[in-house]
Image 1: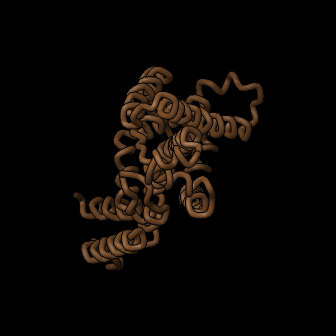
Image 2: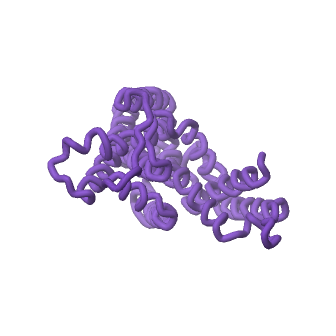
Image 3: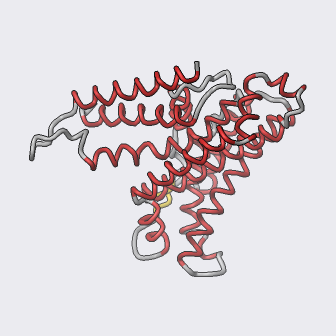
Length: 299
């Protein structure tokens, strides 16, 4: 059944690509199809990378029969935090080296978001609360935290010759963004299919009660998958900030829905227990191709 879902996802992607080719406008200069141009394909891959990174971690959350509604708000918090590290908070760092500033900003932001993901997982595991309720509350709270930290303003970075410009120019490069998504997809695929962590995630989502009787570390797994989701939201927020040259508390609105949609389109069951990283990547690409086609057609 799982293999059939993978084939259905691949078939859906192929059909949508064919549709995009047939409906693609032509370049006025040489009559070639804009959709098939190298620049456009690269742009699709770059644009899906942020949602794709969120969706990779969301796959593990959903496999455990959970849901994470706060990744969009966490992305906004990450984008705002890394922008503040590059601007307002940079004077408090003891070393003025650009590379030091950049490393502290990226690592600090990702770990900060990972901490909030761990808090979500702890509350869900410790108090046996529904993930929907916990992460919905976190969605509101983290968005509010981002607005408080930034005084509800956009933090511009990357203009001039300082460390923020180096950060924005380097991290926003297409091969960095796309490469990050590809490498993470490979790592997550191995994690799901070749490790105990992946088997536990599927087992807990398939039957939590049986997994509890079997002695599986359910609480630790729940904390782990939500921590992972927080870390990936932090990384996606760093990339988002670099690509947009600013961090805003209003970033990432409805990104959680796009990430969940990519996972489900890829064949992962919302009931938990069944899914794949390959399917999630395909689901992300399906959404990216459709979005790109609509943009090319001016819809």
